[in-house]
Length: 251
Image 1: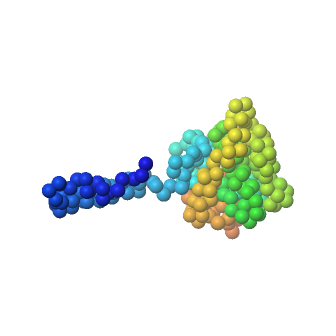
Image 2 (image 1 turned 135 degrees about the vertical axis):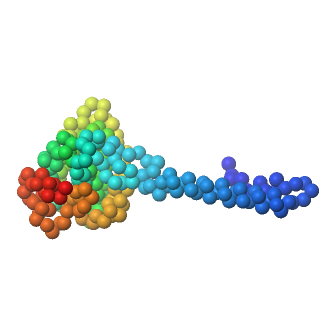
């Protein structure tokens, strides 16, 4: 149906004896006020949110601000650890190998609030779409309550040759290795095939850039980025079991 012409509404309201300037002026004021009120509503309801109106995976924070690995588990007052990674990033895999187990354990026990931000900038560098494919699959796994397990399986299956990427078959295999079974596995596979969380994947990349992150892995503890030239950062990538000590030093 075509939108009504405001001029036609005004003409219809004119007195038959002739137009009244006062009445017309009053109507125009009402229209302008209502228009401004509508604009205010859009502004206050977050019309600029890049994930508004789209599905969010379980544990995801709106507007691409990451996904909580263990939703609702963190104890009150514990440190928040934000990890910015890319599933194709080999240095991220070094962090995973050295300290992934301790990071998961502390997140699962509620000693930290663990938030992952799965970036996809390496797709452009490697001329593929593997990072986005894997990130979407990770979010699909989150719906089954298996994001950390998927995260671990994906890095364990990272190709030795950087840039070799992942296939749909690869990420579905990682879902099975993560322990997704039964009807949840069917839902996971459908989610992967539909690229269900593509918008959230893109929103995460956009938001990460706005948060000042331009490399992976980037580690934030209580909102403060760990200096990538520091000994503590180096320890996280190379020394197994160093995460609790680094966390304590920066909490």
